[in-house]
Amino acid sequence: MSRFFVLAPVWGWLALLLAVPLAIVLAIALGETADRVPPFALGFSLESFRTILTDPLYRDALFMSLRVAGLSTAGCLLLGYPMALGIARAPERWRDPLLLAAMLPFWTGFPMRINAWIGLLADDGWMVAALSWLTGSPVRLLYTDAALYLGVVYTYLPFMVLPLFASLSRLDPALDDAAADLGAPPWVRLLRVTLPLSAPGIAAGCVLVFIPAVGEYAIPELLGGPGAQLAGRVLWSEFFANRDWPMASALAVTLLVLLLVVPALARHMLAARKYCNNDTLNRFQQRG
Image (cartoon, rainbow, N blue to C red; front, side, top):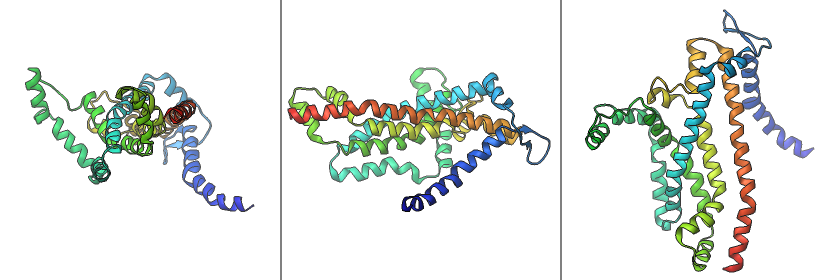
């Protein structure tokens, strides 16, 4: 009984802030568009979900969102892992300043940072001038896929660095020393010892980057071209421009269902690595 009274406020808070809004969005998604305020009528219609599955506009928007989020997550991992590893293995007095430098972009407002990238990537910016001089031909960066990926990776890179640093900083240095004593070169130690043991940080960082990136609206709108019709832009257009609330809600529900796959994959990866991590620890503890 005491356990119930302790958990009741938590479950009530989750129901108020999570379950109730989801139920409202699902109810609107199952409704129909109506010429009224608000512009929908409650009911039970699957027409909006059927349209999402059959109309290339919505289907391509979902696939493009998953592709952009997946590639951006991979880019953040490739850039963030060396950064986190360098910070974790830096001398103690340098760790806090380096970690602070990684967090420094959050001290500036998001619109100001994106506007700065717009100035850098503009046709008269120095980056375009430098690339045009190097390649010998005109280069266009702003409102392209390259600008879109650059903006997403830049924005969410700290979300990858922080969990990786937390995971790497807890690793026992004796394991790497034991691998070195056994004759393993640095790249083997990285792939066979450090990388498997940091799998929880990798999984956490990928989830923290992928989930917000897949529903991103501002970056595709400000840096991407007209063809960057991600789910966030299409959802905004349906809700505010077309005032088709059922379609916008159905798109949001579909995106949420797709996002449930990411934590499931992360959990599966952690479970698959659990035995490998335990085996690695036992092996090097016995030989070290």
